[in-house]
Amino acid sequence: MRGLTGGRGSTTTGRGGLGAGLAAGSAAVAGLAAFGLLCSGCSTGGTGTRDEGPAATQQVARAAPSSASPTGTAKPFPRVDAVTLVKGDPKVSRQLKADLKPCTGDEYPVDTSYGTLTDGPAADVVVNVMTCGDSVGVGTYAYRQRTDGSYENVFAAEVPAVYGTIDRGDLVVTTQVYGSKDSVAYPSGEDVVTYHWAGGRFTETDRVHNDFNRAVGGGEGDLPAPQTTQN
View 1: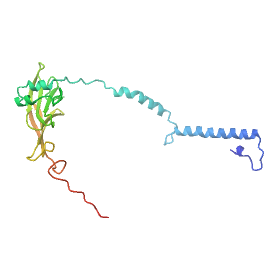
View 2 (view 1 turned 30 degrees about the vertical axis):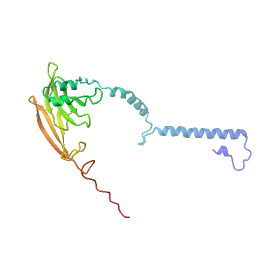
View 3 (view 1 turned 90 degrees about the vertical axis):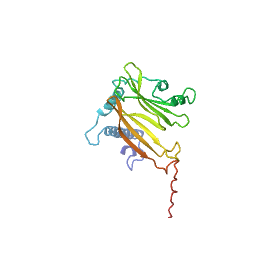
View 4 (view 1 turned 180 degrees about the horizontal axis):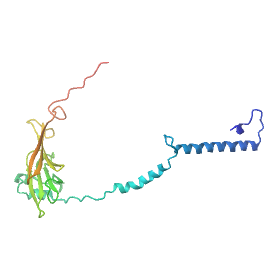
């Protein structure tokens, strides 16, 4: 850098001197840049450059698609016509069959779940029938496939606000509990009953009752007004 500025008494530096100074300055800057690039590859522990870093990243990127691909693909559950299944079931009440109609077009108020409940030859089926207006469950049924491919009803619950689900191999049936002044949207509580298949039938293994806070939502009570503090 000294050659660029020249000495204090040298006021007439020639073109050659200036060019040499610029070249020396450029070489110094290039040297510093190269040193900076080398240091950027050093680890914090001072063990030198880590050439394997970028290469390892590329290997992981190439290996990611193969690791994300499963070795086997789960077979989809065969679907059933839940409406036909319910309407042809002798264990379903006549009233429910008569009320089971499409809400709009050919859309019926029916939810269907597939899973393992009875360790049968195929997936078991849980069907929930609801009302069109407010989607309140009116019937829950569990079906087990026979060896000939037909289905038999192995569980039925026809009570207001009932809904069944499959949870880790068990049938869990939730029933909303309503008081005399409860609206459909705000029940007073619920009963949650767990059934496990054993010995060719479902047996109740757990029961939980939940009471809901009536001061929340559209219940009879109101939340207290927030209190303001004086500063």
